[in-house]
Every structure is written in C-alpha cells, then in structure tokens.
Amino acid sequence: MDLIDRQLGIHAQALTLRATRLQMIASNIANAATPGYKARDLDFRAAMDGASVGAATKYRIPAQTSLDGNTVELGTEQTQFAENAVDYRTTLSFLNGRIQTLMSAIRGGE
Image (cartoon, rainbow, N blue to C red; front, side, top):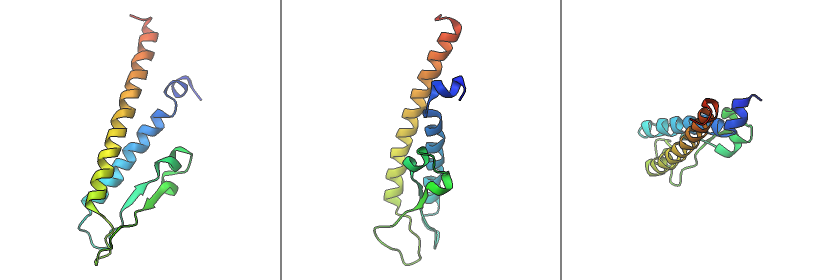
C-alpha cells in the first residue's frame, strides 16, 4: 500500500463504487420502458468488503410486477439515484479535503 492509498483510505474506492452505482441506476432509469429489462443495483457494502462489482451486482425485485417483464420502478430508481448522488458528493468532498491537507503539508503549510 503506497502513501496515497494510506492517506485516502477506503474513500477512493468508495468514490469509484458510488460512480459505478450511479451509472447502473441511470441505466435502469433509461430503460424504464424497455420490455424485459431487469433493473440492477450494486450492493455497495459487499463491494466495499471486497466482492467484485460483478459479484456485488444484484437484480432488483419489484414491489409490483409488470406485464412486459420490466422490473424498473421509476420512483424507486429516482430515490436511489438521489441518495447515491448525495453519498457521492459527500465522499468527493471528504477526498477533496484530504487532498488539500496533503497539498498543504507538501508545500510546508503555506
């Protein structure tokens, strides 16, 4: 583990996984009217615990089934997207603060 990894900790990995989750949820929303489309989501905790993204990807089980086999529930997807976007911004802000602290230390506390 190098110095950067030690300083940024798990937050760099978390940011990458949150971005991946945003892409998955956006894909679900984009395919809300696609017959047979199966909504997917990332089990964030499993991915953080070391599971691969593929192993941590799960299919959503809809509360109400549709006749065309599509499992996207737009309200659920929009809520999950908004919550994950907030988590993404929070992680990004934390990392930005860490990087600014490191840069200040490198510059000698200017």
